[in-house]
Length: 191
Image (cartoon, rainbow, N blue to C red; front, side, top):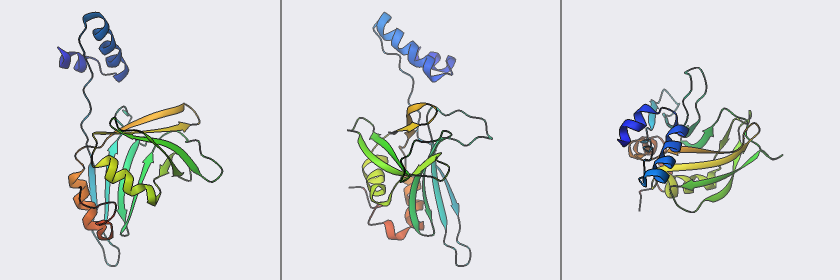
């Protein structure tokens, strides 16, 4: 019965409402299924003096958009042997005069951490600063099923973006090959 209800209700909010009603009325939990992580990995091989680029992308769980719009995504990329991670949104993020975006990062049910990320030029995304990058990958992405990033946007106020991050292994291997200097850092073996 649970899977039939989930398939019939395409809207995530309606499924949550049905889950709440089912719990209250029938005493059963009818929870919407958790989206499986779908890391898409793109490898651009080295050409001449330019090193290979590896990009791993996972989209936000509730993001269903037309193909011509930018998806809400979490990106981990190695370009020019430099590792970086950033989040893209369609809303402008609220940043301070230094270009810092205050975000709350929570992996699964672990205690959330309040950190500052660096806003993109258009303020529609934020880069993870280098000191935070190791924590994000080692403590969150490699050990969690879902990563929640909460930030303030100019149009919708405080918004929580949920990214499925499980099954990062294949992306991790490709990133290690492109960024060998990070094998002992952010891309180190899981302990």
